[in-house]
Image (tube, rainbow, N blue to C red; front, side, top):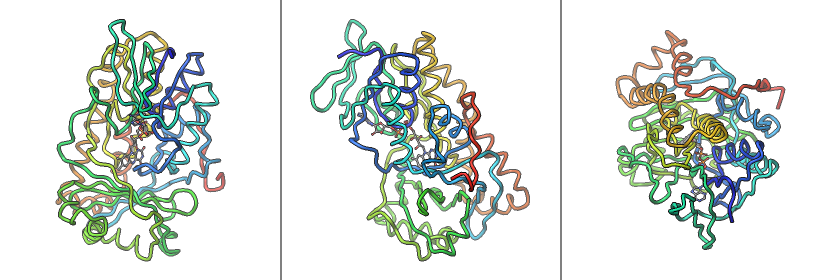
Length: 379
Ligand SMILES: Cc1cc2nc3c(=O)[nH]c(=O)nc-3n(C[C@H](O)[C@H](O)[C@H](O)COP(=O)(O)OP(=O)(O)OC[C@H]3O[C@@H](n4cnc5c(N)ncnc54)[C@H](O)[C@@H]3O)c2cc1C
């Protein structure tokens, strides 16, 4: 079977690229290993840029139940400070978002193959890319978009993560008092060896997503309960927020080895790398989905303009490098004990700093459309 373009991975980046290409009349096959969308480790924060890109793709997040977020709150040691978010933002479960994106790809005419895992990707001497899937079928195309997110394909892997980060996501139903107190804020909690975020998502549920260095998880006996206790001891605000909360998953979902700070330098001809396969920004920025949408849009435009992948990829890297590096510096700051102790105090004195930091760590420019205003009344 041969199409003009094969897209490997049907998450945010893969779906966005497939929709952009199919709308321009290209024949596209998208291969996604999960038979249906499922929960993914993600804070589920949608930045203003992400909202605009999703709107341009025809995804109406308000009708999917997205919760508008208006504040960011930072908690470390015994202090907490808050500031209004400097851009419109919302949160939506990945299950709902991925379901809508796959449906939009199908509606755009993409040939979507689900429940098939790509095992290998190689190139024939004639220059065609060949993807072999787990049922033995082979798909060929002159152009491939690599969009497998956190998962690497053999022969195309990103470098190892030296910090050995481990990330968890858990859903909770908060007590009434804590739900009211959290309100429309995205909370960032800092503790030794990592950070976590708490925010409301649709259905009156709260997402707690956290990242820790593996050594910390090992010290907690590689057990979620021990790790959660340790994070709550370090950050009393988290203990308060989760007091009386009902866990909604049997156990948290987990992902390991996240190469934060990675930006792909080079690629081979006919292989466009997008989403987490192009760049992995520290999670606290809440910008990964926006980067996935942005890199997908840029790569699709490059392909349509006949810009070869080996020219496109280094250009994308240069454009994203300054903000990626800034986000990394900020992430290192969050991981520093002294910075953790003084940050909330500084932000109380100068809440504008939080707005500036939030603005500077936005990597992307959204698609040129106007997103609908999200308000509590609109959903
Ligand atoms: C702890 C944590 C918190 C985060 N919080 C946020 C946040 O709040 N806001 C935000 O914007 N970003 C956040 N991110 C980042 C965001 O989740 C990612 O950047 C984004 O999902 C990347 O999109 P993607 O399309 O590259 O990958 P994904 O959305 O993960 O999609 C990749 C797809 O490829 C499929 N796949 C993988 N391997 C194969 C294979 N071999 N064959 C076929 N299919 C395959 C997978 O099943 C998956 O559906 C967070 C990340 C982490 C780790």
